[in-house]
Length: 278
Image (cartoon, rainbow, N blue to C red; front, side, top):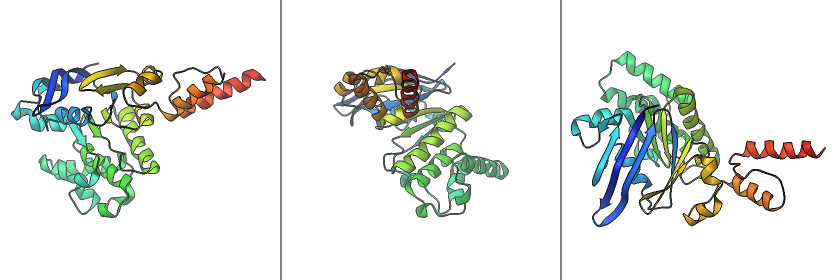
């Protein structure tokens, strides 16, 4: 596996406010990384540094070996690592869904047939085929966010950075968007960097990075990170609801593993206990 994203001793400050402090980080091609941290811990700054929206105060950020401070590489960097923001209205630029998705590939100066193919594939990938001729402003929040993701997908990036993409959505919209994100990673091999404050979303990732006071506080598999509830609380965070329930059941004498992080895992474990009791 190769590092697609690499931070080398990266610090970032807004004036005298030090947001990130000497961060070392690597993200492998095809990995799904979730980034957690309390508000103001530097999560969005980290995302903007990958995309070249911000440049490090100290240190280097590399995207597929390209230095983000090299202005001649910026266009290539943003094609490699696309960004989806929290509010899709800030990213939607056209009056019809397919035109919005076509916007980025048109700006790349691609052949019309290539643009058509990319638009169709991107819209299909996010499950919005029935809405291709609709006006984005008439769509639900979850559908708009999927349009924004399709717009980035049409650039055929190897990495997608999503900065709290479900924060403004209802549970159904969140579930649909997360389903798209998971499929893009598992089926298409796209590297995902998901910034979220929903622990159950982070549980879907291969690895969790927790930022605290501008530093990396935790970095490991979800099962490992979430099994330490006291540590999570000390960092101003929670564990996924299913993990919290599991730990309560353990306290009440049920022989369960502490590292259960998904609902289906808990159901399976409870069924096993029930079967063993008969």
